[in-house]
Image (cartoon, rainbow, N blue to C red; front, top):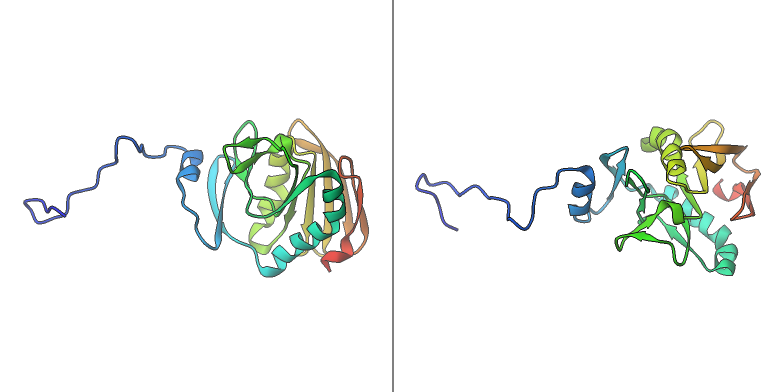
Length: 200
């Protein structure tokens, strides 16, 4: 390493072929994997949040087990966390706890599934994500054309499961909710009655 005449290390300069990121989307693309955290772009802002608790991920796993016969019969894919969804239009990038997609779901680049190609997303509410999961993500998923959003809320009083469907003009037009433990219907294209006692 060469020192300057004043005995200091020279200030690093950006390489010409690697410009500095100027948007949340560019910062997101430049981020290396950070163990224990997930990165999302929500309303144009880059957010880092810790991954959920084991109970949180177990809820998504139980849901995938319940949907497995339907997924296999229709040659769909069930992605449990770790898969980003690119919201068409604003290009926000969200990480649902479970995403149902056809095998040929269109992608943004190699890693992100396009929102309009999905069948359903699921969010499991945790204490650190209540506002984002209950308020922001339904609006964003509806705006991105995701047909169904399932919201599993074990921290509500009492715990609830909500199905949002029929997205139009950035809002889900249909909403049904049950107390956790009761069955709830997932509309077409899923067309499945979910026994929500699996989450208890």
